[in-house]
Image (cartoon, rainbow, N blue to C red; front, side, top):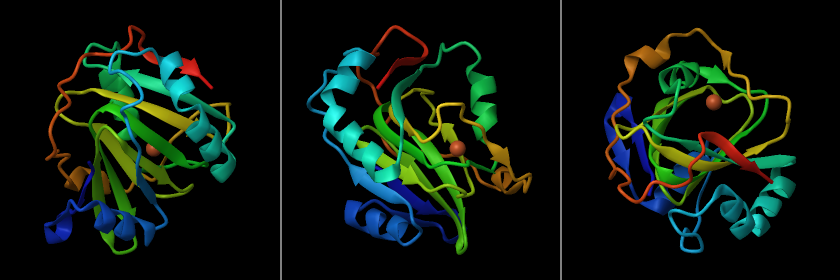
Length: 193
Ligand SMILES: [Fe+2]
């Protein structure tokens, strides 16, 4: 379950319907999807197969042309460099769509009314529109596995704003760390649909 925070006013929202409404007002979609159809240790191919209907629906909704499974663990080579690409305020020229299968991370959004953070965990889906100023990092266990959707297969490039606003916010996660079995043996992207 996600945790929505407005750090400037020290406001925390944990109710799913309230999170959805608050994010919807900012053009960000938040959904909860079931995880019970896949085992924690299933392969990326099994994930893509199990969610093929939802993956297809999402492709149609957003004009996405591909989906994959990203798998990041504490031992992932180059993890610090990878995280450093995304923990500074940036935008993308396409939507950022993530369905979290395992692990936890925290998105920060620089919105018109101030900064909001959304801590995401297993079962959470976020769809962040093109051009939204945001940054992201992992929670303490440095673990995340997620389905991603893309509108462009040529690459995933952050466009940095250089605002420095990200330096003012501590990426503190409040939800439970995922303690289930590690899944998959590959690092990074190990299947595409
Ligand atoms: Fe991003």
